[in-house]
Structures are given as structure tokens and as C-alpha cells.
Length: 285
Image (cartoon, rainbow, N blue to C red; front, side, top):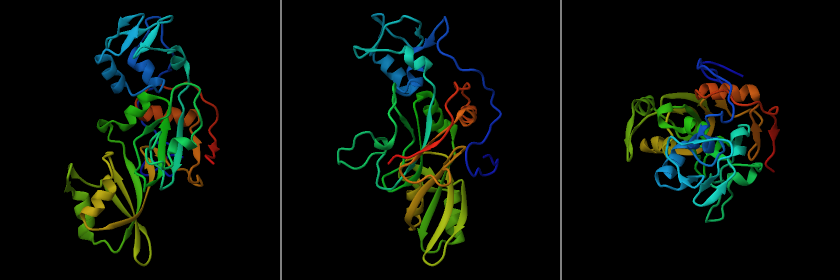
């Protein structure tokens, strides 16, 4: 499942140290860490709520250094949060094969199909998508109930590789490929492909595999469009060390097992997660 240069499925391994992950000890865990692990939001979001004075523990305002201990009464915006279950729930990560036509949101005002409708329900917390794919892009979408893990994988400082298979209409010159690797100015700043590999194709359509290390909106499409090239199909095939499994159909998902989760946490430089059930593919239909 691992290939140091270009993984073909599963997870790559890093050399970061890992340690057992447990619930709050007798000194307690910081509020933002517990709530992020429970999928209430990312740690950064929760820190913002704390600064906005939206959290109370035992009736007292919460600060960034406040720790949750057994028996503490937590409220967010006046609503009681049973946080103890977040401290012990296992981390889950799903690989979802998003088809074109679905949007990465919980509720769409236009009534379009949403990815979360095809995911299993969680007894506590919520699914958090790791990055986004636009409505016309298909392929690998990661979701997890661990907000801290999601934040690590999405944060710009992590520079996690995203690999896409792109079908381009028409021929592409070597000069154009060189320009895309050197970088072009877009409306939100300079961007480039870190790698471009020819993937074959006959006639008018050609396939390329491209890698970027940032998640700006429609970045892959905009880079090609800056060179007046038409993207006729776009599919994400890898996010960091995780590759879209062979045979995973659109609207289906695959859940990482213990070994795969441990490797992903190691990649994200997080403590080792609690044990999970064996991984298995599941249908969203």
C-alpha cells in the first residue's frame, strides 16, 4: 500500500514519533482540543468562539488555557454540551468517491445533491470534510470526525500534496507545461503545479497528472485556463498519503482501519489514535 515516490493506494509513512492517545487525564484537556476531537469544529474555530465569550464551564467564562475535567458542566451559546463522550470516541476517517454534480456542503439552497447525504450517521459529533471539491470535480474526498486531524491536513503550512487526473482538450506544448511549473499570476496570487506528468490519450483529449500543495478554490482549473486550455474532466486521485482506492465507485466510501489510521496520524504528526474496527468499503447507495 505504500510507495515513497508515488503511492498507488493507502498511506505513506513518515518518521514522526507517535504516542498513545487517551481521554482527559486528571489535569484535564484543553477545551479546544476536546471539542475539535469531537468534530464540533476545528481548533481554530473553537478558539475564536472562546475569544468571542461563547463558552462557559460551570458558569464561568472559558479562556484559551481552560481545561475540561471530569464532572465539568460545559455550555456553548447557552446550550449544554455533553463533552465527555467526545473525549473517548474513536477517530474515524472515510475516503468518499465524490461524483461530479454533488456539492461539498450539508445543505444546498439550490437543492443540489450533497455529499453528506451519502455518509453514515455518527452517534456523536459530525463529519468534517478535509478540503473541498467543486461541483464539477470528482474523486477523493476525505471526511473525519476529528477536527484536529482535519485542521492538520488542511492547514496551508502543512503543504499537503493534492494529485489530480486532468483531461485536456487539445495539444499542450512543452512551453506551456514549463510555464505551468514555473508559475503564473492568478487573481489571488502566483500559483504553479509542483509536478506534471503526461497520462496518455488519443485524438483531441490528453490526460495529465498534476500535483499542487495548496487548496485554493478551483486552482487546478484556473491554472490550465490561464494558458487557454479547456479542462474537460477533473478528478482528485490523491490527498497527501491517501490514494483513491481502485474499484471504489462514485457515491461509495471506504473507512480506514487501525493500521491506516495510525499512518495517517503519523503523517499529520499527531498522537496515535484509539483502535478502530477493520476497514471495509461501503456503498452510499
